[in-house]
Length: 240
View (cartoon, rainbow, N blue to C red):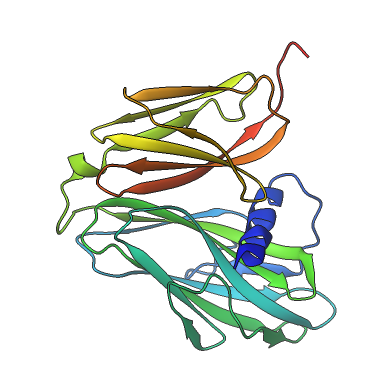
């Protein structure tokens, strides 16, 4: 599971600045090209939200394609699942166990499902598709599910959270409102816990001047169990 998590982290973090081969093109339900883009799915008072994608092999050779997901933000009591190659994968599965064989020009459908379980607000999930034997050959799309009206938890209990600046040079600040954040964890790109904060105000700051440059992931946890995951890029101090 940790190796799979590291693979997904690597794919997501490389999406912006790595030179990757892209043999796959991703389309939304309206056949718009959303490869390495962002999709927003909005519904009202929903118990299940769904995104329908089509993945096309645009290469000149066949590929064995694995699908995976990385949850960036999601309420603790919500869940998500997906379907790839006509196989349904539960919330416990982060990637497809059975790769799909895609011939030249073939297309394959993918469905992502988000179950708010009474939570309002948003959940953001990255879906990636890669050649099973070559993790540098991939395409991704970021999907934000926005459930407008809660069926159980008031909006004020979910609150708002932020991390800035991003990219960060000398430090990064975390802020929140209408929610009681009790713990902030910061992880390396390899998933190693590096730093933990237990704030007693509605803001916290981390001095990054002695931290190596690179990608980091953070986790903000409230006293009600709400968890928000995100990332920031440390580009080094301007005075170096």
